[in-house]
Image 1 (cartoon, helix red, strand yellow):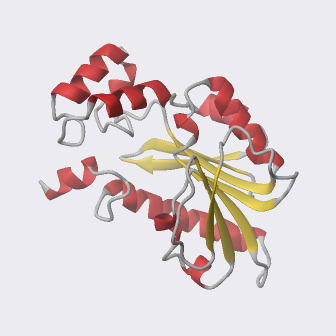
Image 2: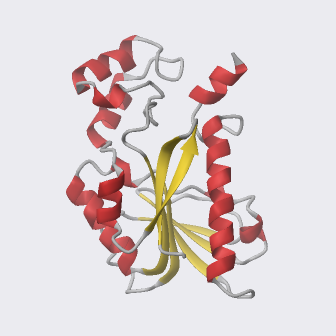
Image 3: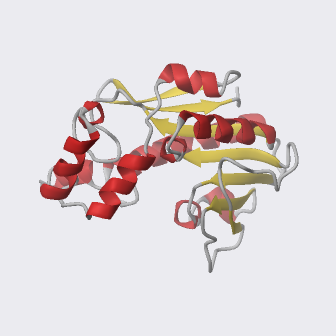
Length: 223
């Protein structure tokens, strides 16, 4: 049962498999940082859709190597040193000039933008305002859907998915509140590899593996 709970738990939970996968991905990110930026340089990072919780204990932040700006629909308060927050929209970063940041980082956000057009807007903006980027999203075709933790539910009609989420405990061992279920069904548009490469044509695509299959894609131009 503990292993099942770890598999089904949200990636924000420290004992979840999702959290472990994020940490492994961050190790890849750290290695690319070391490869692309000289020692001693303070790197200005925009995290689109991220939280202070993800960054606050990272050694690169505590040492001052990374300066993090969080961008979310609402500003986050009471932040640690090296982290600041602002309200904004991932599809419109016009408050920033071209190459304003050294790096744009994003974890599991671009699939939450409702439409392909909005995903294109975010991708264009992220590439405009930075020199380097590291953008991750779950693989549309991984057998366990990333948000509901139910096998193959991404291929089901939304009406059936809504009923499963709100009337059973198949998703993460709980029933969803109706408004939360509907919000996710409205906003999530999963991305496949071809689309990820189209969004970021100059990127390398890092395949994050689980059980020998690609669980998520990360587009980056960090060599």
